[in-house]
Image 1 (cartoon, rainbow, N blue to C red):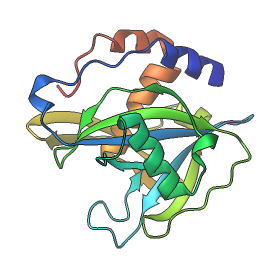
Image 2 (cartoon, one colour; image 1 turned 90 degrees about the vertical axis):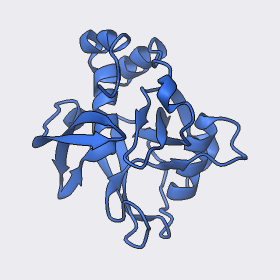
Image 3 (spheres, rainbow, N blue to C red; image 1 turned 135 degrees about the horizontal axis):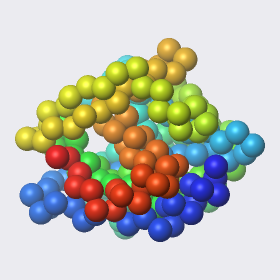
Length: 199
């Protein structure tokens, strides 16, 4: 599975940001995979005291800081801050299509991997819990529903997943669906290169 994932991401190039979103503030997230015999995806539950998306399942990430060299640096910095992982334990292996968030941020997802033995130490100021979803489970696309999201004048059809009591929905679920399509389903992923986003 990891060989397929790396191969697909190596040949995938996300479409440019639509012109109408060029002036929007940037954010970046990391689809982080723990390597091993049974690779898994790292997800977080946002701390309950946060001003936005409190208690929701999310990917590590956040807004771009002025000091970030690029959006990949944003994704890495935020992941280090949230999960207590050393940056040299993270390897970026690709990017996914960008998406507009309900708050008007242009969010660029990156895909990264880390060694199997890495211990995560969640930042309790930002993260309420950390859990892992096996890639083999995610690849089955076992959605429990689909929701219509109207955001910034765009309509997005997002899957809803439930894993061990955690509800995965909204932008996080949209990003994971792109991850499945691009990285784990080669016959479909090839078509994504020319597919418009957010329509």
